[in-house]
Image (cartoon, rainbow over all chains, first blue to last red; front, side):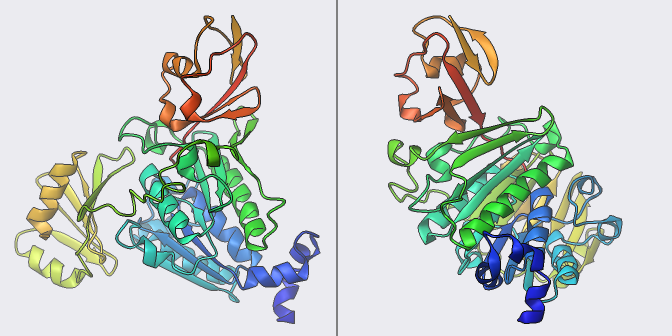
Amino acid sequence: MIQELSRYAQQVLFKPIGIDNQKTLMKSYAIVIGCGALGSVSSSYLARAGIGHIRIIDRDFIEESNLQRQILFDEDDMRNNLPKAIVAQKKLKTINSHINIEGIVTDVNHTNIEDLVHGADIILDGTDNFETRFLLNDVCVKKSIPWIYAACLGSKGLTMNIVPSTTPCLRCVFESLPKTGTFPTCNTAGIIGPIASVIASIQVTEAFKILIKDFKSLNKTLFEIDVWDTKFKQIDVGELRSENNCQTCRLNKYEFLEAKDGVLTTLLCGKNAIQVTYRNAGDTNIAQLAQRLRSTLDVSCNEFMLRFTVNGFGFTVFPDGRAIITGTDDKNTAKSLYAKYLGM
Amino acid sequence: MLITVNDEQKECSPGTSIADLLENLGIDKRYVAVERNHKIIPRTQFSEIQLLESDNLEIVTFVGGG
Protein backbone atom coordinates (compact mmCIF):
# COMPACT_ATOMS: atom_id res chain seq x y z
CA MET A 1 0.00 0.00 0.00
CA ILE A 2 2.77 2.44 0.94
CA GLN A 3 4.58 1.90 -2.32
CA GLU A 4 1.33 2.30 -4.21
CA LEU A 5 0.47 5.53 -2.41
CA SER A 6 3.81 7.10 -3.30
CA ARG A 7 2.86 7.33 -6.97
CA TYR A 8 -0.08 9.54 -5.97
CA ALA A 9 2.06 11.81 -3.76
CA GLN A 10 1.14 15.08 -5.48
CA GLN A 11 -2.55 14.20 -5.56
CA VAL A 12 -2.42 13.31 -1.85
CA LEU A 13 -0.73 16.65 -1.13
CA PHE A 14 -3.72 18.41 -2.62
CA LYS A 15 -5.64 19.23 0.59
CA PRO A 16 -9.21 18.26 -0.36
CA ILE A 17 -7.91 14.77 -1.24
CA GLY A 18 -5.24 13.75 1.29
CA ILE A 19 -4.36 10.17 2.28
CA ASP A 20 -7.76 8.97 3.50
CA ASN A 21 -9.60 10.15 0.42
CA GLN A 22 -6.90 8.71 -1.82
CA LYS A 23 -7.52 5.33 -0.17
CA THR A 24 -11.23 5.79 -0.87
CA LEU A 25 -10.47 6.50 -4.54
CA MET A 26 -8.35 3.34 -4.66
CA LYS A 27 -11.33 1.31 -3.45
CA SER A 28 -13.82 2.93 -5.83
CA TYR A 29 -15.49 1.49 -8.91
CA ALA A 30 -16.09 3.85 -11.85
CA ILE A 31 -17.67 3.03 -15.20
CA VAL A 32 -17.02 5.00 -18.38
CA ILE A 33 -19.73 4.47 -20.98
CA GLY A 34 -18.46 5.42 -24.43
CA CYS A 35 -14.74 5.68 -25.12
CA GLY A 36 -14.50 8.31 -27.84
CA ALA A 37 -13.18 11.84 -27.39
CA LEU A 38 -14.60 12.25 -23.86
CA GLY A 39 -14.01 8.68 -22.68
CA SER A 40 -10.37 8.71 -23.86
CA VAL A 41 -9.63 11.61 -21.54
CA SER A 42 -11.84 10.62 -18.60
CA SER A 43 -10.63 7.01 -18.45
CA SER A 44 -7.00 8.17 -18.62
CA TYR A 45 -7.37 10.54 -15.66
CA LEU A 46 -9.34 7.97 -13.64
CA ALA A 47 -6.61 5.37 -14.21
CA ARG A 48 -3.77 7.78 -13.41
CA ALA A 49 -5.59 8.94 -10.26
CA GLY A 50 -5.70 5.34 -9.03
CA ILE A 51 -9.44 4.61 -9.12
CA GLY A 52 -9.34 0.94 -8.05
CA HIS A 53 -11.71 -0.55 -10.58
CA ILE A 54 -12.53 1.01 -13.95
CA ARG A 55 -14.89 -0.50 -16.50
CA ILE A 56 -14.84 0.96 -20.00
CA ILE A 57 -17.70 0.09 -22.31
CA ASP A 58 -17.75 0.95 -26.01
CA ARG A 59 -19.24 -0.66 -29.10
CA ASP A 60 -17.02 0.91 -31.78
CA PHE A 61 -13.81 0.13 -33.59
CA ILE A 62 -11.10 2.73 -34.17
CA GLU A 63 -11.38 4.66 -37.42
CA GLU A 64 -9.03 7.16 -39.03
CA SER A 65 -11.34 10.11 -38.36
CA ASN A 66 -11.25 9.36 -34.59
CA LEU A 67 -7.53 10.09 -34.23
CA GLN A 68 -7.91 13.88 -34.39
CA ARG A 69 -9.52 13.95 -30.93
CA GLN A 70 -9.63 10.48 -29.33
CA ILE A 71 -6.29 10.68 -27.60
CA LEU A 72 -5.93 7.08 -26.42
CA PHE A 73 -5.70 5.68 -29.95
CA ASP A 74 -3.08 5.58 -32.71
CA GLU A 75 -2.63 4.56 -36.34
CA ASP A 76 -1.66 0.96 -35.51
CA ASP A 77 -4.91 0.50 -33.58
CA MET A 78 -6.83 1.73 -36.62
CA ARG A 79 -4.93 -0.49 -39.09
CA ASN A 80 -5.52 -3.52 -36.87
CA ASN A 81 -9.29 -2.89 -36.76
CA LEU A 82 -9.30 -2.95 -32.96
CA PRO A 83 -12.21 -2.18 -30.63
CA LYS A 84 -11.84 1.01 -28.59
CA ALA A 85 -12.65 -0.65 -25.25
CA ILE A 86 -9.93 -3.29 -25.68
CA VAL A 87 -7.28 -0.78 -26.75
CA ALA A 88 -8.22 1.51 -23.85
CA GLN A 89 -7.88 -1.38 -21.39
CA LYS A 90 -4.48 -2.37 -22.78
CA LYS A 91 -3.03 1.15 -22.84
CA LEU A 92 -4.34 2.14 -19.42
CA LYS A 93 -2.86 -1.03 -17.90
CA THR A 94 0.56 0.10 -19.06
CA ILE A 95 -0.08 3.45 -17.35
CA ASN A 96 -1.29 1.97 -14.05
CA SER A 97 -0.73 -1.73 -13.40
CA HIS A 98 -2.02 -1.51 -9.80
CA ILE A 99 -5.67 -1.09 -10.69
CA ASN A 100 -8.30 -3.30 -12.26
CA ILE A 101 -9.29 -2.12 -15.77
CA GLU A 102 -11.90 -3.91 -17.83
CA GLY A 103 -12.74 -3.12 -21.44
CA ILE A 104 -16.11 -4.39 -22.67
CA VAL A 105 -17.06 -4.32 -26.35
CA THR A 106 -20.80 -4.02 -26.50
CA ASP A 107 -23.65 -1.67 -27.29
CA VAL A 108 -25.25 -0.36 -24.10
CA ASN A 109 -29.01 -0.69 -24.36
CA HIS A 110 -32.07 -1.47 -22.22
CA THR A 111 -31.46 -5.20 -22.45
CA ASN A 112 -28.05 -5.11 -20.77
CA ILE A 113 -27.53 -1.81 -18.94
CA GLU A 114 -28.74 -2.95 -15.51
CA ASP A 115 -26.23 -5.80 -15.49
CA LEU A 116 -23.43 -3.69 -16.93
CA VAL A 117 -23.65 -0.96 -14.28
CA HIS A 118 -24.28 -3.20 -11.28
CA GLY A 119 -22.21 -2.18 -8.25
CA ALA A 120 -20.78 1.03 -9.72
CA ASP A 121 -19.93 3.92 -7.41
CA ILE A 122 -20.14 6.37 -10.30
CA ILE A 123 -20.75 6.43 -14.05
CA LEU A 124 -19.12 8.88 -16.45
CA ASP A 125 -20.97 9.67 -19.66
CA GLY A 126 -18.81 9.40 -22.77
CA THR A 127 -21.63 8.45 -25.14
CA ASP A 128 -22.31 10.09 -28.50
CA ASN A 129 -26.11 10.12 -28.58
CA PHE A 130 -29.16 11.35 -26.66
CA GLU A 131 -30.88 7.97 -26.42
CA THR A 132 -28.14 6.25 -24.41
CA ARG A 133 -27.99 9.24 -22.06
CA PHE A 134 -31.72 9.01 -21.28
CA LEU A 135 -31.29 5.28 -20.74
CA LEU A 136 -28.33 5.94 -18.44
CA ASN A 137 -30.42 8.50 -16.56
CA ASP A 138 -33.22 5.93 -16.10
CA VAL A 139 -30.95 3.22 -14.76
CA CYS A 140 -29.00 5.56 -12.48
CA VAL A 141 -32.14 7.06 -10.94
CA LYS A 142 -33.63 3.58 -10.51
CA LYS A 143 -30.51 2.09 -8.92
CA SER A 144 -29.44 5.31 -7.19
CA ILE A 145 -26.02 5.55 -8.85
CA PRO A 146 -24.51 9.04 -9.35
CA TRP A 147 -23.62 9.84 -12.97
CA ILE A 148 -22.10 12.78 -14.76
CA TYR A 149 -23.59 13.97 -18.02
CA ALA A 150 -20.96 15.27 -20.44
CA ALA A 151 -21.31 16.13 -24.11
CA CYS A 152 -19.54 18.20 -26.72
CA LEU A 153 -19.97 19.43 -30.26
CA GLY A 154 -18.06 21.97 -32.33
CA SER A 155 -16.20 24.01 -29.72
CA LYS A 156 -18.96 23.81 -27.11
CA GLY A 157 -19.43 21.38 -24.24
CA LEU A 158 -21.93 20.75 -21.44
CA THR A 159 -21.70 18.86 -18.19
CA MET A 160 -23.92 18.30 -15.16
CA ASN A 161 -23.76 16.09 -12.08
CA ILE A 162 -26.73 13.85 -11.41
CA VAL A 163 -26.85 12.53 -7.87
CA PRO A 164 -30.17 10.70 -7.45
CA SER A 165 -32.41 11.99 -4.63
CA THR A 166 -30.18 15.07 -4.30
CA THR A 167 -29.88 16.91 -7.61
CA PRO A 168 -32.28 17.21 -10.56
CA CYS A 169 -31.90 14.38 -13.08
CA LEU A 170 -31.22 14.81 -16.79
CA ARG A 171 -34.94 14.70 -17.57
CA CYS A 172 -35.75 17.41 -15.04
CA VAL A 173 -33.64 19.68 -17.26
CA PHE A 174 -34.17 18.30 -20.76
CA GLU A 175 -37.68 16.94 -21.17
CA SER A 176 -37.44 14.48 -24.00
CA LEU A 177 -35.41 12.76 -26.65
CA PRO A 178 -34.77 14.98 -29.68
CA LYS A 179 -36.08 13.47 -32.90
CA THR A 180 -33.56 11.89 -35.24
CA GLY A 181 -31.99 14.43 -37.55
CA THR A 182 -33.22 17.50 -35.65
CA PHE A 183 -29.93 18.20 -33.87
CA PRO A 184 -26.45 18.74 -35.27
CA THR A 185 -24.00 15.88 -34.70
CA CYS A 186 -20.21 15.61 -34.71
CA ASN A 187 -20.55 14.51 -38.32
CA THR A 188 -22.55 17.54 -39.42
CA ALA A 189 -21.19 20.31 -37.16
CA GLY A 190 -17.70 18.91 -36.56
CA ILE A 191 -15.74 19.07 -33.32
CA ILE A 192 -12.31 20.19 -32.20
CA GLY A 193 -10.32 18.01 -29.79
CA PRO A 194 -9.69 20.50 -26.96
CA ILE A 195 -13.38 20.88 -26.02
CA ALA A 196 -13.57 17.16 -25.23
CA SER A 197 -10.51 17.41 -22.98
CA VAL A 198 -11.91 20.42 -21.14
CA ILE A 199 -15.31 18.84 -20.52
CA ALA A 200 -13.89 15.43 -19.57
CA SER A 201 -11.45 17.10 -17.17
CA ILE A 202 -14.28 18.88 -15.38
CA GLN A 203 -16.25 15.64 -15.37
CA VAL A 204 -13.41 13.67 -13.73
CA THR A 205 -12.85 16.40 -11.12
CA GLU A 206 -16.54 16.17 -10.19
CA ALA A 207 -16.21 12.37 -10.08
CA PHE A 208 -13.42 12.68 -7.48
CA LYS A 209 -15.69 14.89 -5.35
CA ILE A 210 -18.58 12.43 -5.57
CA LEU A 211 -16.38 9.42 -4.81
CA ILE A 212 -14.89 11.04 -1.70
CA LYS A 213 -18.31 12.43 -0.77
CA ASP A 214 -17.24 16.08 -0.82
CA PHE A 215 -20.78 17.13 -1.68
CA LYS A 216 -20.18 20.68 -0.45
CA SER A 217 -17.72 21.30 -3.29
CA LEU A 218 -19.88 19.62 -5.93
CA ASN A 219 -20.83 21.72 -8.94
CA LYS A 220 -24.60 22.17 -8.73
CA THR A 221 -25.04 23.83 -12.09
CA LEU A 222 -25.50 22.96 -15.72
CA PHE A 223 -22.10 24.04 -16.98
CA GLU A 224 -21.56 25.15 -20.57
CA ILE A 225 -18.27 26.24 -22.09
CA ASP A 226 -17.30 27.34 -25.58
CA VAL A 227 -13.53 27.15 -26.02
CA TRP A 228 -13.61 29.02 -29.34
CA ASP A 229 -15.56 32.04 -28.06
CA THR A 230 -13.84 31.65 -24.66
CA LYS A 231 -17.15 31.94 -22.84
CA PHE A 232 -18.79 29.87 -20.16
CA LYS A 233 -22.12 29.76 -18.35
CA GLN A 234 -23.27 28.12 -15.18
CA ILE A 235 -27.00 27.76 -14.68
CA ASP A 236 -28.16 26.77 -11.21
CA VAL A 237 -30.68 24.03 -11.99
CA GLY A 238 -31.30 22.93 -8.37
CA GLU A 239 -34.88 24.23 -8.26
CA LEU A 240 -35.95 22.13 -11.23
CA ARG A 241 -36.02 19.03 -9.07
CA SER A 242 -39.14 20.21 -7.29
CA GLU A 243 -40.63 22.40 -10.02
CA ASN A 244 -40.91 20.10 -13.02
CA ASN A 245 -43.00 16.99 -12.54
CA CYS A 246 -40.22 14.76 -13.82
CA GLN A 247 -41.28 11.43 -15.33
CA THR A 248 -38.09 9.76 -14.22
CA CYS A 249 -37.12 10.98 -10.78
CA ARG A 250 -40.52 12.12 -9.47
CA LEU A 251 -42.89 9.60 -11.05
CA ASN A 252 -40.34 6.76 -11.34
CA LYS A 253 -41.31 5.94 -14.92
CA TYR A 254 -38.32 4.46 -16.70
CA GLU A 255 -39.44 4.80 -20.29
CA PHE A 256 -36.06 4.04 -21.86
CA LEU A 257 -35.14 1.21 -19.53
CA GLU A 258 -38.49 -0.49 -19.93
CA ALA A 259 -38.58 -0.34 -23.73
CA LYS A 260 -40.50 -3.37 -24.88
CA ASP A 261 -39.21 -3.59 -28.41
CA GLY A 262 -37.12 -6.67 -29.06
CA VAL A 263 -35.29 -5.14 -31.99
CA LEU A 264 -33.41 -1.96 -31.39
CA THR A 265 -32.21 0.28 -34.14
CA THR A 266 -30.01 3.34 -33.76
CA LEU A 267 -29.19 5.80 -36.50
CA LEU A 268 -25.46 6.38 -36.29
CA CYS A 269 -24.51 10.05 -36.21
CA GLY A 270 -24.35 11.29 -39.84
CA LYS A 271 -22.91 8.07 -41.24
CA ASN A 272 -25.80 6.80 -43.41
CA ALA A 273 -25.71 3.72 -41.22
CA ILE A 274 -28.00 1.97 -38.78
CA GLN A 275 -27.06 -0.23 -35.87
CA VAL A 276 -29.37 -3.16 -35.27
CA THR A 277 -29.43 -4.99 -31.95
CA TYR A 278 -31.66 -7.96 -31.36
CA ARG A 279 -32.65 -8.59 -27.78
CA ASN A 280 -32.41 -12.36 -27.93
CA ALA A 281 -29.40 -12.56 -30.19
CA GLY A 282 -27.18 -14.07 -27.52
CA ASP A 283 -23.59 -14.71 -28.47
CA THR A 284 -22.86 -15.01 -32.17
CA ASN A 285 -20.20 -17.41 -33.27
CA ILE A 286 -18.35 -15.28 -35.81
CA ALA A 287 -16.45 -18.21 -37.36
CA GLN A 288 -19.61 -20.25 -37.90
CA LEU A 289 -21.50 -17.28 -39.29
CA ALA A 290 -18.60 -16.56 -41.67
CA GLN A 291 -18.65 -20.13 -42.89
CA ARG A 292 -22.41 -19.99 -43.48
CA LEU A 293 -22.28 -16.68 -45.37
CA ARG A 294 -19.21 -17.56 -47.44
CA SER A 295 -21.23 -19.88 -49.66
CA THR A 296 -22.89 -16.84 -51.24
CA LEU A 297 -20.92 -13.77 -50.10
CA ASP A 298 -17.40 -12.39 -49.90
CA VAL A 299 -16.82 -12.27 -46.14
CA SER A 300 -13.83 -10.96 -44.15
CA CYS A 301 -13.48 -11.41 -40.40
CA ASN A 302 -11.31 -11.42 -37.29
CA GLU A 303 -12.18 -12.52 -33.74
CA PHE A 304 -13.94 -9.23 -33.02
CA MET A 305 -16.09 -8.81 -36.15
CA LEU A 306 -17.23 -9.99 -39.53
CA ARG A 307 -17.74 -7.85 -42.64
CA PHE A 308 -19.48 -8.25 -45.97
CA THR A 309 -21.19 -6.15 -48.62
CA VAL A 310 -24.35 -7.08 -50.43
CA ASN A 311 -26.36 -4.99 -52.94
CA GLY A 312 -24.54 -1.85 -51.84
CA PHE A 313 -25.26 -2.41 -48.13
CA GLY A 314 -22.24 -2.96 -45.88
CA PHE A 315 -22.60 -5.26 -42.87
CA THR A 316 -20.34 -5.35 -39.82
CA VAL A 317 -21.43 -8.05 -37.37
CA PHE A 318 -20.13 -8.39 -33.80
CA PRO A 319 -19.98 -11.36 -31.39
CA ASP A 320 -22.78 -9.84 -29.26
CA GLY A 321 -25.20 -10.21 -32.18
CA ARG A 322 -25.17 -6.54 -33.05
CA ALA A 323 -24.76 -5.37 -36.64
CA ILE A 324 -23.96 -2.04 -38.23
CA ILE A 325 -25.51 -1.72 -41.67
CA THR A 326 -24.24 1.04 -43.94
CA GLY A 327 -25.90 2.40 -47.08
CA THR A 328 -29.25 3.19 -45.45
CA ASP A 329 -30.66 5.60 -42.91
CA ASP A 330 -34.01 3.86 -42.79
CA LYS A 331 -34.52 1.77 -39.64
CA ASN A 332 -37.01 -0.60 -41.21
CA THR A 333 -34.76 -1.30 -44.20
CA ALA A 334 -31.96 -2.07 -41.75
CA LYS A 335 -34.19 -4.35 -39.69
CA SER A 336 -35.26 -6.29 -42.73
CA LEU A 337 -31.69 -6.56 -44.02
CA TYR A 338 -30.66 -7.88 -40.61
CA ALA A 339 -33.46 -10.41 -40.70
CA LYS A 340 -32.65 -11.36 -44.29
CA TYR A 341 -28.93 -12.02 -43.89
CA LEU A 342 -28.47 -12.71 -40.20
CA GLY A 343 -31.88 -13.92 -39.09
CA MET A 344 -33.67 -13.00 -35.87
CA MET B 1 -38.28 46.75 -25.92
CA LEU B 2 -34.71 45.50 -25.58
CA ILE B 3 -33.71 42.25 -23.91
CA THR B 4 -30.43 40.33 -23.79
CA VAL B 5 -30.29 36.73 -24.97
CA ASN B 6 -26.98 34.88 -24.54
CA ASP B 7 -25.06 38.18 -24.39
CA GLU B 8 -26.73 39.60 -27.52
CA GLN B 9 -29.25 42.42 -27.47
CA LYS B 10 -32.56 41.65 -29.12
CA GLU B 11 -35.70 43.63 -29.81
CA CYS B 12 -38.94 42.03 -28.67
CA SER B 13 -42.49 43.24 -28.30
CA PRO B 14 -44.12 43.71 -24.89
CA GLY B 15 -46.20 40.70 -23.86
CA THR B 16 -43.77 38.20 -25.36
CA SER B 17 -43.55 35.07 -23.21
CA ILE B 18 -40.48 32.86 -22.86
CA ALA B 19 -42.29 30.23 -24.98
CA ASP B 20 -42.94 32.87 -27.70
CA LEU B 21 -39.30 33.95 -27.65
CA LEU B 22 -38.07 30.36 -28.02
CA GLU B 23 -40.48 29.82 -30.89
CA ASN B 24 -39.31 33.04 -32.61
CA LEU B 25 -35.72 31.86 -32.24
CA GLY B 26 -36.63 28.45 -33.66
CA ILE B 27 -35.64 26.66 -30.44
CA ASP B 28 -37.63 23.66 -29.23
CA LYS B 29 -38.52 24.30 -25.58
CA ARG B 30 -38.15 20.62 -24.68
CA TYR B 31 -34.40 20.72 -25.22
CA VAL B 32 -33.31 23.85 -23.39
CA ALA B 33 -32.64 25.21 -19.94
CA VAL B 34 -33.57 28.88 -19.58
CA GLU B 35 -32.30 31.28 -16.96
CA ARG B 36 -33.92 34.71 -16.60
CA ASN B 37 -32.04 37.32 -14.59
CA HIS B 38 -29.90 34.57 -13.03
CA LYS B 39 -32.87 32.43 -11.99
CA ILE B 40 -33.75 29.11 -13.62
CA ILE B 41 -37.25 29.00 -15.10
CA PRO B 42 -39.11 25.66 -14.98
CA ARG B 43 -40.48 24.77 -18.40
CA THR B 44 -44.02 24.63 -16.97
CA GLN B 45 -43.75 28.42 -16.64
CA PHE B 46 -42.40 29.18 -20.13
CA SER B 47 -45.84 30.18 -21.44
CA GLU B 48 -46.87 32.18 -18.36
CA ILE B 49 -43.83 34.37 -17.87
CA GLN B 50 -43.86 37.57 -19.93
CA LEU B 51 -40.56 39.22 -20.64
CA LEU B 52 -39.81 42.71 -19.37
CA GLU B 53 -37.54 45.48 -20.66
CA SER B 54 -33.82 44.73 -19.96
CA ASP B 55 -34.43 41.09 -19.05
CA ASN B 56 -31.28 39.03 -19.31
CA LEU B 57 -31.78 35.49 -20.61
CA GLU B 58 -29.35 32.64 -20.83
CA ILE B 59 -30.46 29.74 -22.98
CA VAL B 60 -28.52 26.47 -22.88
CA THR B 61 -29.36 23.91 -25.55
CA PHE B 62 -28.99 20.15 -25.09
CA VAL B 63 -25.86 18.70 -26.69
CA GLY B 64 -25.55 15.06 -27.70
CA GLY B 65 -22.06 14.54 -29.13
CA GLY B 66 -19.10 13.08 -27.36
